[in-house]
Length: 259
Image (cartoon, rainbow, N blue to C red; front, side, top):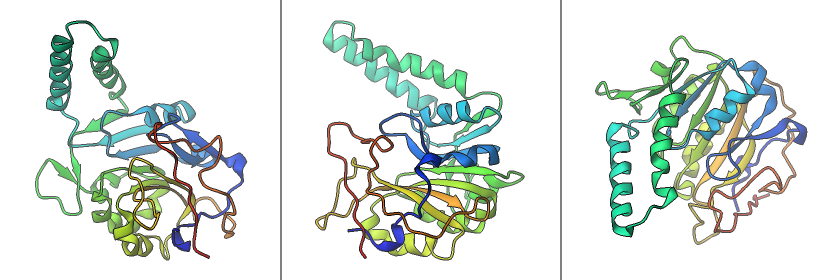
């Protein structure tokens, strides 16, 4: 069971919508934020920007800024080399092996103009030009939707997120190895204006020996920007027709909370 402090506040189901694919990379948001946000900032991009594309369709005037130091020219070249080797070994054309070329073209077409990708690592304290911080990213920006999926490094920037939460309308954050970091998560959530309105366990991470999911995705609404009733949700998670498996060939993880 998960501790009670991770239990979402109740939001009308009519306000909850899914943005992005019905698999890994899709997230649940409160649709009321769409008219109150100007910028989507993504920390951790990899090769999936379906959420960003879907968000832009819902909020056509928004600007998108992505930060990921791992997605570089070398990243794409490595993908192409692996595809070529696979083709040579198989000695026949497999359609899925040429999809990386189209993915790269899609990447170049999408991230331009008011949609930018910066090859920078998100850190607490900047040491070089290949790194940046939340305060630096947020400088001269407001009405932000922040999406964070940086594979465990999220714990290093929680204080910066909390200190700059006045600029955040909505936060999507993936916490890794939560069984080891519950205290850090609780300290981040306590006395914060960012309130949990949805939770989903990422089944890629599995569970620990006590059945606690190792990776969770939280949707958090700034209660100073949009008022919510301070009533805890009685819903069962995952929510049918709203939540989907991150990994399709593995059962989704049912979430239960301590009383």
